[in-house]
Image 1 (cartoon, rainbow, N blue to C red):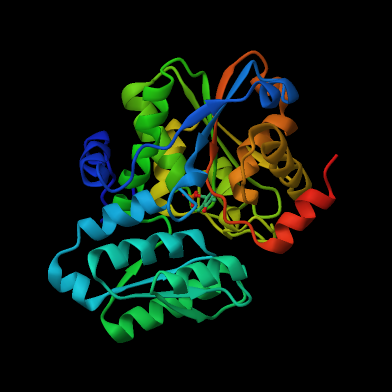
Image 2 (cartoon, rainbow, N blue to C red; image 1 turned 45 degrees about the horizontal axis):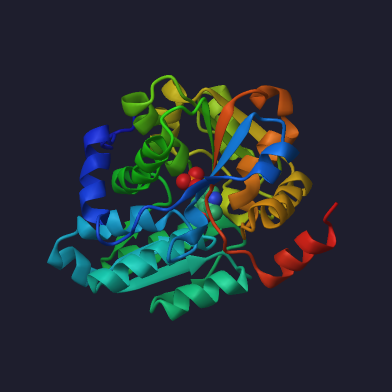
Amino acid sequence: MVEGMYVPTISDVFRARRVLNGLLPPTPMWSYAALSATVTAAEVFVKHENVQPTGAFKVRGGLTLLAGMGPDERARGIVGYSTGNHAQSLAYAAAWAGATCLIVMPENPNPAKAAAVRALGAEVVEAGATFEGAWEAADKIAAERGARLVSAANEPELIAGVGTAYLEVFEQNPDLDVVVVPVGGGSGAAAACLVAAAVAPGCEIVAVQAAGSPGAHDSWRSGEIVNRPNQTSAEGLATGSGFELTQQIMRSQLADFLLVDDDTIRHAQWLLLRDAHTLAEGAGAAAVAALLAFPQRFAGRRVAVMCTGANASEMELSRVVAHRS
Ligand SMILES: *Cc1c(COP(=O)(O)O)cnc(C)c1O
């Protein structure tokens, strides 16, 4: 158990959906014959969270969290730490709620993501060499300001909000065998577990993280929170350890947890561009990379892959196109 931390339920996901109705339309989920033919799974469905207004699924959680804050708490503002998409989600939601927002990013962030956060009206501070360093700095700033520190994953409202993506997935296709979810902090995979258990209990949830940053994977495998090197270039997957709340949910309900290397992720980005005319950042292509790396695990099955985000830097995109094969 996480000391004092509320574990969200399917009712919280339905409540979040009421909040998000009218703020975010459902995202499409399409099957592409060319993509299904390239990977060996029987049929691949791409859930397009890359078309969210911030370019990633996290905005569902950010809006849900800000909607639940009262006027006093909003006035004190929020502080987040993020490699990018959580930051954009919080900045977007804070602008919607009229709250101030400060984001600590690890030094030398993806310039496209930093610029997008500033454009949404949030203050950006660069501190720390990694995600963990940014976390420490954010903690300090939030304490100084009396603002609310928003964790990347130990937040029940974020999980509930993100869960609405999985309600859509099972409405859009009630006959899925597997949903593959890229993992950083684990809010997406935890939400998928909660929703599948309630509305699609026969469907497996399979998580995927980058081999260069296996903190969440190794925490799940070992059953305890462990720290690991954090070296992947796929920012959304770059966490150095597991988070208590999401690990607790995944521990009982996740079917499997896979690791993929950055080259396979890059190839998956290229396949999404070519076969699904879809722009995915590295983390957004990790689920497709899992199908490429473990074809026998998915053969003959109906598989939804979460295309979690589109916020690739120019340099990343030029590498994807240069390394195509
Ligand atoms: C944050 C993020 C992830 C990982 O999600 P978690 O909920 O932190 O596990 C995957 N893909 C993208 C694009 C992200 O921004």
